[in-house]
Length: 389
Ligand SMILES: [Zn+2]
Image (cartoon, rainbow, N blue to C red; front, side, top):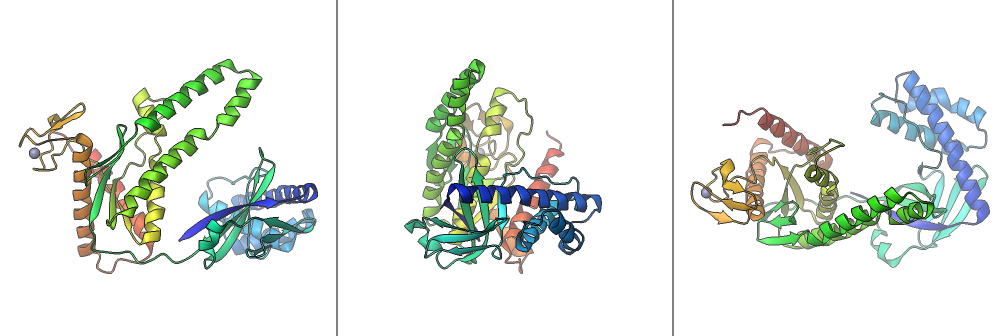
């Protein structure tokens, strides 16, 4: 598993200029490489290196050999990411990857020595006590980030450590996500979204007013407000996921909600769905579980809200508005709670199936995750074409 630790660098005016100029030149080298790779239909590192390295050294002689290689490697990754459909282009001050040949980080002495086009820059940073848990992690690479508004540089340390083995055989918890409750769990817990919804609509209202005004001070205010909603919802989601993963459960079952709405101009309800931080919730659950050797499973959301969790009847009439009452057995329950129990059940049957079909399932987590997502995707497509009665 990988984590990034961000440290603020203490830089002098001169160092800042050197770093900025390095970023600009690095960007030129990067764009030059992607352009060549795109024109010659290749993202192969070695080919790129062989064909662009000397040209780059000629054009921008200030850029050190290490930085040129770094730019070529990054360009190769970017080309591969874009699958050669376009030539990736960087903005002049976007973050750059500094591999360990061009930067030296002394965590204990709290300084970093960074290669620039004007020689090495030695800059100190504060390494907080909180980060000491990363002391025995392996430093993989670093990222140099420039924040334009603050006019400050940050160094991101990308650390790596092998994840603990996944605990198997424990209980699984179903989690239903929605508007009324950010999360409702199959063990009868509710995390209400009232506070979050209020904050979001208040901010949207203020934003709309300020945008309509359009004066210089309104724009200044808008810039100050930018990111507030994101930070607030991140905080709320963090608290909830902390609470959820703490318990004895070893598996958490979520609905696969990717791509529920991709339209730009949507109806108000869908618009809300569009901006709801589902992905944030998922990533937060995933990385916390990874650290604890727990598992997140995704299941097909088809009919989870209309199926009866007691008898399994999935009649559309079971759910009317905010009420759930089974037409077959008369079972009545909070709809979100009912859905979460269905999700837990689906998770159980899915992991049961996994064990039978794949006795030698690979330990590679990413491969497993991708496989799970693909499976969920496939079953969603199947349902889309299933005739309704
Ligand atoms: Zn029923």
